[in-house]
Length: 170
Image (cartoon, rainbow, N blue to C red; front, side, top):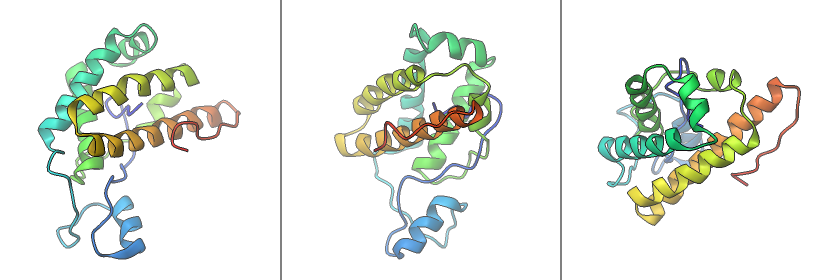
């Protein structure tokens, strides 16, 4: 669950490798703030507007969902702020804007999340991405979402003293 809009978050990684710079640049591009000196390739379908549409469409569905809707309703006090932060999160990941500087893991650690919640999040997110973006673009975004779900699910398990393995991005 890309929970950037709860109350805190960590620097997001980027979806696309840096063009023509080799493996080191790919890793650097995933971990550092974007720089004008490092060119990046972004698909023209991925815009601030398409990201905002994806975020708003997904959360409209999530809020109505019987399983994850109550979690969001309890955790999110200001929906406009949350949607703005989540849009910043995805903008940082997909467009390398660097706008999001929160810590998304922490708020998720405080929620009563189970594997079923992460499965449902993806079950709602994936068709949303496919409706808004072409197949290739959606596939890249979905792969990133699966990694996020795995990361959060493993983080939640660790805090509970459990061991979890990636289930979605393998």
